[in-house]
Image 1 (tube, one colour):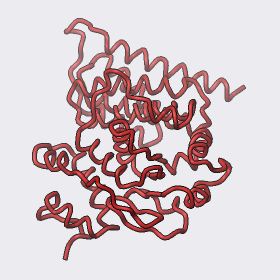
Image 2 (cartoon, rainbow, N blue to C red; image 1 turned 90 degrees about the horizontal axis):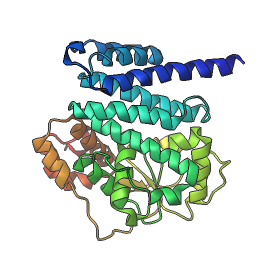
Image 3 (spheres, helix red, strand yellow; image 1 turned 90 degrees about the vertical axis):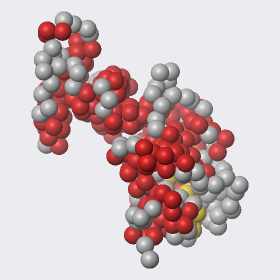
Amino acid sequence: MQTRSRHWWCGLRRAGAAALVASALAPGPLHSQAAIDPNVAPRAAALEREGERQMAIDLLGRYLATAPDDGRAWFQLGRFYLYDARQWHLHGHRGDPDGLLYLDFAVTALEQSIRLSVDSGLIFRGLAELERSLVFVEDSGWDPARYARVRPGMPPLPDYLVELGTNLLSSCPVGGVLLTGSDLETLSVWYGSLERPALDVIPLRPDLYATDSLYRLRMAEAMGVDPGLPVQRALAAVAPQRALCLSPGTDSAAAPAVAWAPFRLVRLNRPPVPGTESLSLKELLKASRQSTSPWVLEVRGVYDDAARHNALLCSSLLLLYGDTPPPACRP
């Protein structure tokens, strides 16, 4: 009874925060808007780091109801709702509201941050759409999900990020399983697969496979293995039938004990067979010269990590590195 009451109370508090979000979005008299307080977003972030995410959400909701032009506050609010959606998965897909409602709240807030030119708002808006696709995979399986498209009105991600996803996917043989590590890798691969569905690679998130029973069931079905196996043993069972591809950021603890060969941006469990498609860096080179976004450096970091495992990349990425090659590419 105490658990049910706690879920009900948490749902009520979040519904109240959502109402505050809605009131912040509603047009009102200009004189009723408070001045932007640059300390609110950092204060909310500090509360979240201290384990007080709900208190941070309440703070932001009340503040944004009177100061709706603070893009950083909108971004923090969207980020917190995104994290709530992820926790819903970890807690066995139980709780009120459910994960999709959290994502609706996150999207509303993140789109306001995009409108107010917060650079990271676009990336996190993409992560929210990625989380929607996760719910679709858990409901319907991987095969229907791979043909799903982003919802109408979804802002496009930066071209250099989609380019990274295409490069990662084209580094993995057709029919292979591509393990991704960071959120950035996972997001780029998902968007890249939307752009190039013919590449026919199964992207796998080892962390979710280990912690989310529904995700593990659906992805085990896609790979044709027993869902009762832990991730490392499941991949060992897949290895004789499919190519396994480790992205630069993949945690090696998820990888089975097989020989790995570097190829382009990944490591393969079998000798690579070079194809006709080459890596493209056109968009990242353009962004490196024209953009000040920190996400350009984050994306470059994925290529840097790949070069640690594949020295042949150093010459291929020479134009990108210029006078600042990563340690793996220095004489």
